[in-house]
Length: 393
Ligand code: FDA
Image 1 (cartoon, rainbow, N blue to C red):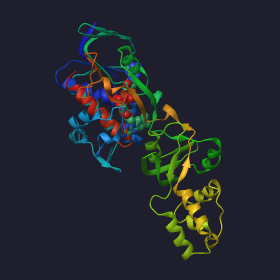
Image 2 (cartoon, rainbow, N blue to C red):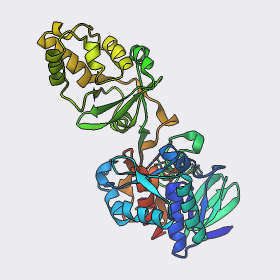
Image 3 (cartoon, rainbow, N blue to C red):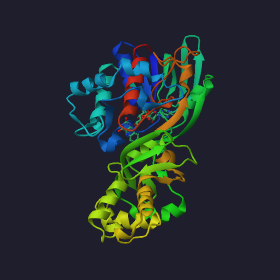
Image 4 (cartoon, protein in one colour):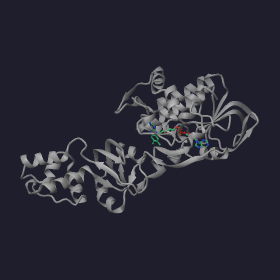
């Protein structure tokens, strides 16, 4: 049996970063992954440019049943620490919007950074390898795998969530948590496009490719960014953000005119261009194709502006500014960027990520019930949680 100080299961963002930290402290570290090709999510992230952190990352940008849990790790290894590391590697980057930092060149730069950090720390990496069985021993853990038996003092579970199964996602981490008596909170897809009921889809699918500045709200939470009509439903950053707050059956409220008071604007148009058709006026704000289909979808009559009574103009404005849509569902884990829920953090130390009742067992990254907004927050959680565990394993 090969014995090591630390075994990390999962060679994703959190696992590689944690392994490098532990290795740099002089610990012998082995990372195991069942994927043929590692780093798939990193390479795919941010449209191939990896939105590796967010300048404004703080606990408010994360969803969790235990909202204070992430504070300690985020404050001990901050976005500025990771930005400094990126700069040390000579990787150039830019802010796209809202504090979101992307590589100028390619997400490969981030994967190479992680692999070089592991290399410097003499971390061993084996994949593809199947982990068949884990057992607790008096001084650590033994792992039965497709490459033989391994032993370790500290075992780190960094197997992520359920999103994008074709990139290697599996429920492995949840099963390990349950094996050791930890609770796993119900999981669901987050940062994911909405699908539509048939009657909505029939009309709106024609808008596939149209993007609009809008705000999307569920209860008291709202996000203003683009929404994108697709042939399956609705996507775009504002939709992905609100999807993490949406529960099946809930209505989403869209304001398709977040930049104007639409009623004031329509009244001004009515005074200045009384003979213009409603569709002509609205085409100053929206793509023509959208206006045509939106009038049909909202069952609004198209006629010269002067023919609209005050109440009718209010109806037009409110159709566009309080569009209440009940999605049919989401596209699910197939396209979701993250998994909400997971290992209950009430049973972990927020300082080290160690399971309170299982000395030597750690959970880091997306496998636990800490889920960031869209915009680099999820990678920051992988770095912060991986780093704090890496100091003690
Ligand atoms: P991650 O999923 O990265 O790694 C888990 C590893 O465990 C994988 O290598 C997997 O093969 C391995 N594994 C799973 N089951 C196993 C088993 N049974 N045995 C052995 N190994 C196993 N976030 C962000 O901040 N900015 C962004 O730009 C994006 N973009 C983005 C795009 C897309 C398409 C997706 C799907 C996701 C994003 N994200 C993102 C989210 C981000 O990628 C995600 O939160 C982190 O990769 C999570 O890191 P982890 O290391 O926890 O899991």
